[in-house]
Length: 308
Image (tube, rainbow, N blue to C red):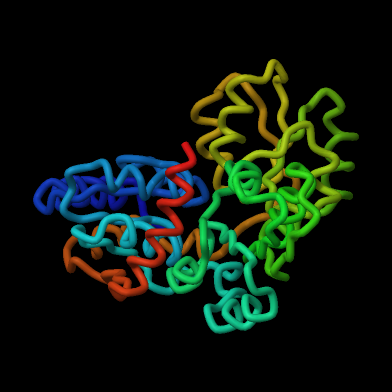
């Protein structure tokens, strides 16, 4: 743990190095509060990659997990993309691999593959179109209703999307987010007893029985909007704990209650200020995607972006 003096010195060092290298620092909403605070932009994974794409930075420091830095590398092939801690991975993204996806596609010829942005570049490259937790329903509805859909890798986002889109012909990959899976219906029920006037907002990566108890099911960006717009003073939040930092910062007059303190993603907490300073100093570790994979993965991402 850094002292206040050490933290201030690190922040000053990061500010100097980012100016010298023309770097943009991106932080996911689940990162440590001190990391979010020094970032140029905080947000969800795809939103941040698009911020990188729109910036004139030469270097992208992505404070998130591996697939997020890969997505930035897919969309920004002319930039140097750096993930300060290489070991920061995503268990859900690792539950789907390109070889298994190819095998499933062979069993279901003619199917469309919709991949959640929380996937590796190779899985994106084997997909027809990407989606986010915010637009999954819209993406699925854009596909011919008679065409079978393989939805990868999150079965819970898939279940939510299948219900909202009224699509019956969806094959759901058996992946899930271990952090969101730790949020149980009994946690929500208990918090509702403790805070009877509170509204409940949860992420669609949560189990279906948790989503059914919520007033709103939304992406991280949607959760932030819900908190700003609701008249409720107390809000029960069912997603990774890191978002509470930003929720409190943006809504100081409201009370945020985590559904369970078990909803913490360990790899989202790997990156600290010292790692960002070291990454800027050493210009590593660089995340790169082979060009043939990058081009195919970009097509899946672009197909989604073209819906708007």
